[in-house]
Length: 57
Image (tube, rainbow, N blue to C red; front, side):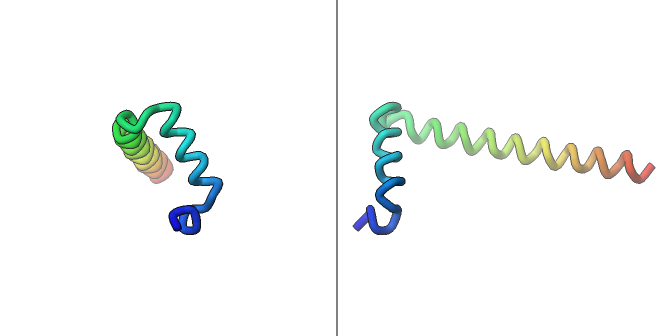
């Protein structure tokens, strides 16, 4: 049933990731990826704001 919802390929990739990194490290890695994404988006917004400010002058 889970394979029907996610897809067989995605399920295999998830299984390989769990085997390589271990189930206990996955939440920490996901949290770290989320923080990195937030910082990246924050940097892009700041860059766009700086570019807009310099174009208006």
